[in-house]
Image (cartoon, rainbow, N blue to C red; front, side, top):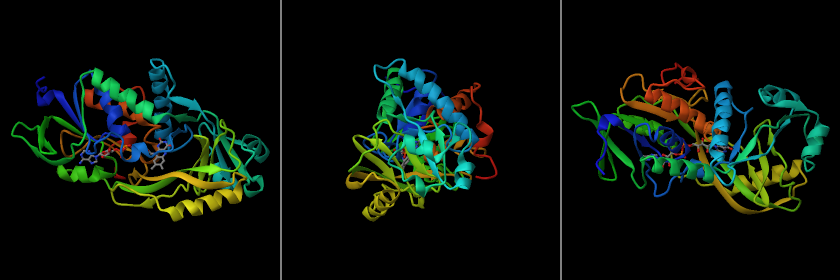
Length: 363
Ligand SMILES: Cc1cc2nc3c(=O)[nH]c(=O)nc-3n(C[C@H](O)[C@H](O)[C@H](O)COP(=O)(O)OP(=O)(O)OC[C@H]3O[C@@H](n4cnc5c(N)ncnc54)[C@H](O)[C@@H]3O)c2cc1C
């Protein structure tokens, strides 16, 4: 099949949840080619998340996009034999002030006695206050990504893996000519959805980077002597020192660290997991023990913590879709809908484009 003319083609760089969600929102409306450097989609951060969507988590534009994403995923679920989302409350525990500062939107304060009723494994004496978000859900991220992939392919979009973008130039006609794994692609518009590599991709295209910083975050599935109830909440410390959740018969646990890193295939450090297990065991009766599996991913953030979405203000035909930090799944479909509207020149239902603009002074 001949490729569409460059003016009808959008090239997306990055096959994580960001690039896939946008390609799926665009497919059927314009030609779409998605280039992923790795041999499989979602190899980096998108296969390493905690898979939880929390409407009360993050600044206001993120919360708006999270609610929109939940609504859009519920529409997808209507087409599927099995759900993508499973209800799972989010319980925040900590000092009075720390909990109060974060209890916004869908989170409401509850007593420590109520918290202990929901999560009996907690040592209630270790915390002063609690907040509960009952609208939070766990997400089958693999099923979500499969849904996007199927929609892209059934709408004529192309997904090409093992295509690391390594060079870019402008043609005389003003389009981009992009080289990936020795192959050339032409497009009027390029979308930068390269996660931790997004600033590097910008430089390849002669675009000013936006001080996007990848931060390490580790998680593990650990055996517990006294596992929490399978339908128990995700429990997080308001000081961001740990979170845990029942998962796969064990406990998913994270030290919630945010350690700056370069863009890389991040690897966990066993000593971080050992310290985490000791901490969680000191404030719960879970009795965490053997580590089944551990991993580290990179959460990439702009200086103000908001995603960077929109056309670059200086270089035509270059579109940003980066800096989703710890909200990449919970904002995925809302951001994709917003980005697709900007690319297609339509009006999105939830328009937070000014807050996410690559032209804002903070980036
Ligand atoms: C431990 C942990 C827990 C998390 N928990 C949650 C959670 O519960 N809920 C939530 O919403 N979010 C969570 N997140 C954040 C979420 O995972 C990310 O925001 C999201 O996955 C980012 O997606 P992305 O597509 O931007 O990046 P990525 O998944 O990293 O995708 C970017 C892709 O670009 C590709 N790429 C880079 N350079 C090139 C190139 N030159 N050519 C072609 N391709 C290239 C990469 O190979 C990569 O596949 C968590 C993250 C971590 C690490």
